[in-house]
Length: 181
Image (tube, helix red, strand yellow):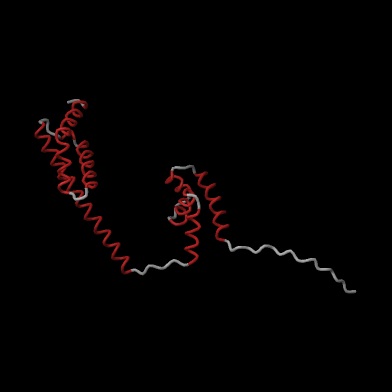
């Protein structure tokens, strides 16, 4: 059977069962967005396995529901793992004292927040998340030289924001020079 024939059969089977398949997930997953995500996963998985789909439309429908069942099981396992991980994290947060930020930290966060969105994200990626400038460039999809110039500008702005105000230099009043002699 040609690739075009396989694709056509797959499309017919999906069209024939799509509403029922989506409702299958809606009846089993309480959140409609999660049900839609599971349905999308079904389509991807079924497409990857479409050469195993029986040629008869009724059998193909049952095969699709079998794939849907496996996707649902996988979704539930992943959800259980996610819930367990979140619970472990929540338990750890309850038992681990969280240090309160010092005033300087608040000032720094406020100063970073006052930068442009692109500059503040760069500062956070490089100094808080520990990425190198070329890695931050890759994450943000920009040129490394752009990162360097933005960081130079951001550092200058942060220095200006965080430096203690320097008093204006006092101009001494005219003091006559007294010579001893």
